[in-house]
Amino acid sequence: MRENERQKIEELLSAYIDDALTDRRRMEVRRLIENDAEAAALLSWLEKQKQLLNVMPTATAPAGLAGRVLAAAHSVAVPQTIVPADISTAVQEYEGRRQLYVRRVLTAAALVFIPVVALSLVVWTIVGPFSSVPGRLAELDLPAVEAPAVVKPVSFPLSASLYLTTSQATAMDSFIHKAIYKHDLTNDATTTGLGGGERTYRIRSDRQRIVALLGELASVWDKCESTAMTVHGRTMAVNARIENVRPDQAVALYEGDVFRDPVQLARQMSEMNRIMQGVRDFGERLPVMPELTSGQRRSSGGAEGDSQGYVTLYVNILSR
Amino acid sequence: MQEQLAQINIDDTVLVARCRAGDSAAAERLIIKYQDRIFNVILKMCQNRDDAAELTQDTFVRFIENVASFRGGSSLYTWLFRIAVNLTLNHCKRRSKFGMRSLDTVSGGGSGWEEARTQLKGYLADEDGRDPALLAQNREVGRIVLESLSQLDDDHRAVLVLRDMEGMAYAEIAETLELELGTVKSRLSRARASLRDILRSVL
Image (cartoon, rainbow over all chains, first blue to last red; front, side, top):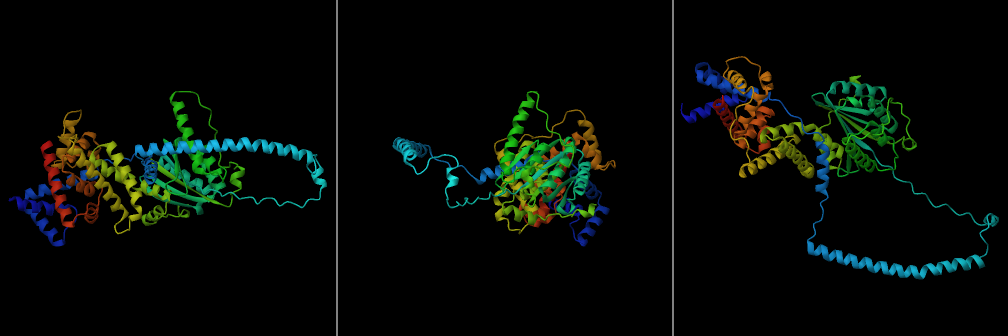
């Protein structure tokens, strides 16, 4: 068989096993393998080779990949300004001189201002229209002073993804499903199957019910090989990931002060877990974690104050 | 109860739009959805777990950086694989340029090597009706196949991994590798023939 011809036949056989031939071509190949033992053996090998490649074991991506990607994307999005060494030195010298000048001016002003103010107070105490005797102000018919307008603080939105990596993904899925039903969250939840027993739930509801759900999940926390939680900020670039997140931490995030930035809180928890892990590595005794046994956890005042606002929780079950 | 939960499989387009608006939760969902498939393709192409982890991370970082330029002309699936394959092929080229390709021959030895070789030969030569899924569970068989795969040219390995391991259609491979459909067919045929020759020489 000439090389050219052989190559053409191999191409036909390759397309045949992929079911990528026209009916006419397919018939030609069938006739060929019926009459040519060499071509039939070649086709059999290619088919078996393809089947084998198709069933080769697959690997799982390293844990925590998403968190690292988002962190890396953030660091790329906010590049550090690179300043050449000589310019940098000149800028630093200028900054130093400026700060010294400002400090001297402020010192001189303070030396003049403080004695003047002190003297004025003494004079005012002696010759003022009334002394600071208690009750004296009340006797005066002064017009009511309007209280300054209180600036209402802005509450933070809260969206977080909880990752539960377990070898019992199906059982975990079933438990979460029931917990959602139990806490009347079925209308607030959507779910997506990711294959291989893995699943993501998106739950958007009020804080109390999310806290109750997390309290329920605490009872299966020890069935997880690893846990993590990513708290999402207002933009993609701002988020915080807590490795080995504990149930009480997850709950604390959702029942915490609504006017406190949850990303900031998550960063503190992440740092705390990192330190605790270090301590644990040295085998030292750790304080006992507060135990959550029920979904009926009482929420704090902060969470109650935000009872009308919605928060979002993604629960991701990852198969080990 | 199953029906009470809305079975909403959020479309990639929606997630991409949310990503573009700066929603990190959407980005995270997309990463989780595709990370294992991307990681597997890269791992089969570069044959090194650490490199594969790094290249997978780079793929998704590149995706987030460029999500604004994704116009939806191709599917997100092929777009992500295009980034992954291009990064991996560049990595492979750099590695071979600096003589860092570690697997120059399919190495024998080790317990079970001979047995795996016999089993694989019997299966491919159609001498026994062994189940390929069971055969692939044998660690030594897997090693022979993957090391043989690593002997292929980078371009041949890419097309074979995408078709026979990832299960991509010809059109998707053409889009991912930015090739003509005819080129995909002929390259795939040559890749399969080369792998067959390598396996025959090993077995």
